[in-house]
Length: 369
Image 1 (tube, rainbow, N blue to C red):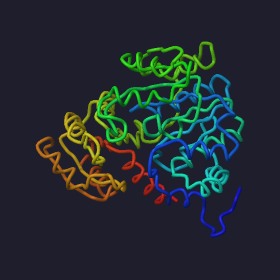
Image 2 (cartoon, rainbow, N blue to C red):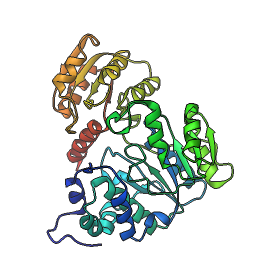
Image 3 (cartoon, one colour):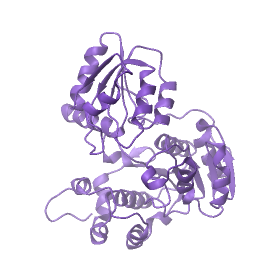
């Protein structure tokens, strides 16, 4: 593994880079992978796109493949506890420093973006691990996403809601078309929503299967393997997705209205205190209205993401929806306040953004080191 001359770790280097390209396109990513010897061609893949549930679907597919005796890897985004969550082999996180070391020289010579680098590192690491199948979660959309360099025989579209409209389009149909642009000619497409079948066929799908959201992982595995797969439950641990932190505190990174609705459907009936941060480019009003249906108390806060609303702005938008509203800019202090208000028999819901949960997790990890 190359060793940076200045002693800077590969992870520190990655974290210092911008996740956003100057313009969207696949040319640099294609050149990057060519420089690396095309590691993405070393394994079969299942490509997962959609608005909500991508990481959960990706990790469930990986777990099912392993249960079927298949050596499998996965790459997901974003992360909650740390960058190492992004790349796994048979469900276990890999050595991220090593993975980044495989691609750093080529990345620096090409000026690759943060997301391009982590995707290339994943492909290189998984190729070196000689996995048979890699499950790949798209980042933003599909057409110009750095993961759209695969010719995956199976593509999963979980669902489509309005998101990133400035880049993907102002309607669900336009967004679905962007996401389905990852479909290679003749690929098998698995849909969690029936309405996208015509667009999937337009994109070149050889077959289209529509199933309930809970059946997406098993169906994808069966289409790849060409046989029936395990029908029982596999339960990979996924940070920030219905993650219980003790008996009365739940963390979930629901970051848009559809994600919040899904989350609320899975909450036990209880007295909830909500602590949340929401990015300014989301449908904040809809998310707050939904959260108000299960809670009378909101602690508004702000994640470290520059796109996040300030605690004061979020609290102002929540006026009239909750009986008690407090604005606390620091996420850790906000969670502490929520714990005080919920004690002794109430429940806490930390939600609104995976970036918010990542901030909380990083501080908790630092405390326990």
